[in-house]
Every structure is written in structure tokens, then in C-alpha cells.
Length: 188
Ligand SMILES: Cc1cc2nc3c(=O)[nH]c(=O)nc-3n(C[C@H](O)[C@H](O)[C@H](O)COP(=O)(O)O)c2cc1C
Image (cartoon, rainbow, N blue to C red; front, side, top):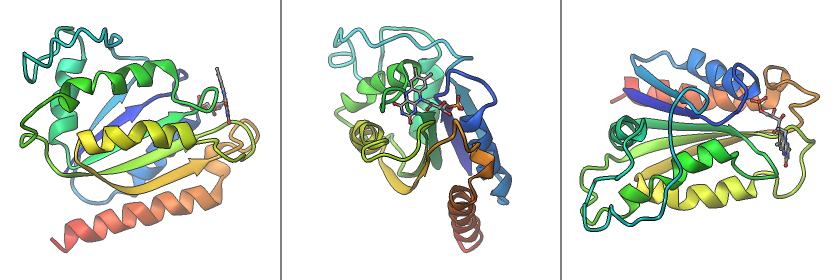
């Protein structure tokens, strides 16, 4: 299976990356992983030029999204792993999500493979209502656009005091989701 992971933290190798790595360590079936860390890719903000309406499937901005579009369209499992900044997606990953407008504007979406999506949310503060609400709202249309079935939204709170790898409850949730994937691939 092909897995695409988008990592939204502006810090490398911290809670977001560690939670993702933990999950990937539990995937036992054969797979290919394409990781897109927002600190290591060049993705410009959407300029709302609407070029992609008359020019179906084409974004006027030529940067790393050219490859990421293809991978997001054709993978079997999409993982969005991101912290919240001011209770919302940080700016770099939000830019990547906004650029998906090109796919949203496709009249014929038959090239978009049906896929599963796992969301890993990371919040430094102790849990509070709506800590991940904006992430959920933003992903509503992202998921529809990319034909995703959500298989989990694991929410790590309080990471500024409790590192993600010490949060047993969330790790168990990730392990259970990985196990379901392992079983479903084996049984197919
Ligand atoms: C600019 C900024 C804004 C933040 N805003 C929030 C917030 O609104 N709610 C929250 O729970 N944590 C907030 N945090 C804390 C981060 O979510 C937390 O440090 C998280 O662990 C960062 O992910 P990382 O460890 O992968 O870098 C904020 C951090 C930064 C840098």
C-alpha cells in the first residue's frame, strides 16, 4: 500500500514526528511511505487566481505541490499529522491544504482514488473544548475533495508537559488503528 504523510510541525523530530513514527512502526504490512515535512518542502500559498478552473488539473504555481498533488490523489492511506497553533493548523500546512483547491475545482474527480485518512492532532496545552475543532472543520472539505474515509483522529493534548511518546492512551489508539490496517490488508 502507498502511504502519504503530511507533517505540519514547524519543528523537526518533536511530538508530531514522534507520534507519526510510532504509528508507522506498528504498520506491519508491505508499504511505501512518502513523507512531506512542511519544513523541507517548497509550497507557496494559493493566490486564488482561479487558473485551475479553466485549466482543469493544473496549478499555475510550479513548486513541490506538483508531486504532492499526484501522491495525495493516488495513495491508499493519507496521514495528516499536525500541531495546533492558536487552535488551528499552522500556516505552512494550511498553505498546502489550501492548494488542494486545484483538486476541489476538478469537474471530473474519477482520477482521485478512494482512500483512508488518519489525523494526528498535537496540542501543547491541557485538553480544552475545541482544541482541535478548527482542524476538524478545515479537513471536512479536504477529506471530501480527496475522497477520504476517516479511520481515526487521535488527539494528543498537553504535549508541552506530557511528551507524545508518554501518552499511553493516544499511543494505544494509534496502535489499534495500525492493527486494523494490518488486518484489513492481510484479509483482502
Ligand atoms: C505559535 C504557537 C501557537 C500555539 N498555540 C497552541 C494552541 O492554541 N493550543 C495548544 O494546545 N497548543 C498550542 N501551541 C503548542 C503546540 O501545539 C505544542 O508545542 C506542540 O507540541 C507542537 O508540536 P511539535 O512538538 O511537533 O513541534 C502553540 C505553539 C506555537 C509555537
